[in-house]
Image 1 (cartoon, rainbow, N blue to C red):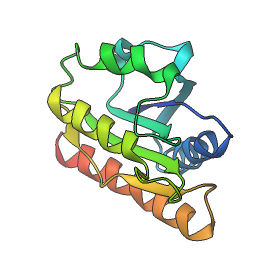
Image 2 (cartoon, one colour):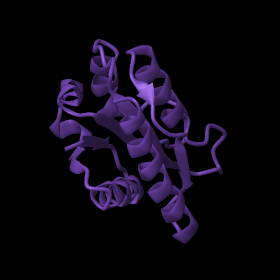
Image 3 (tube, rainbow, N blue to C red):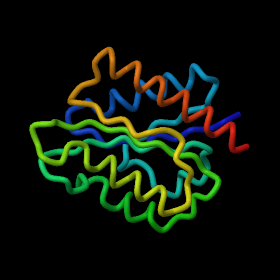
Image 4 (cartoon, one colour):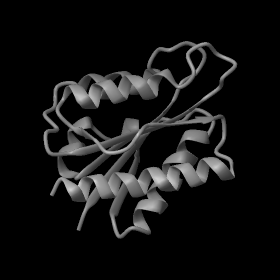
Length: 150
């Protein structure tokens, strides 16, 4: 069975909701999913997963949220060759760096050898109905891409 690990950071609850939507979509595709808040796990935990997902918010500036700094640094020390990854997040277009942290994690995963499984998803604030459809499609494409690589 395919195993997915979702690690999230959420300030207002929007990104946690995004992570939960992706988790449910993956479960509906017969994937074994574990969802954890970023301070409760280590990046090394991705070594036990087939599909690795980070969900983060971007607030105000484009810097990593404080609670994700150590996790991001740990991630850059891993070799995730053979793993499939995806990144999702929330932000506010009011700020100039909309969902910039999503892009930072996308680059980090690529740097450590993981294969991009689906285009990143950036959600304006809380997920609406159309965002849910996009997130469900994201999960489906992740699984399909992972299965092609087997």
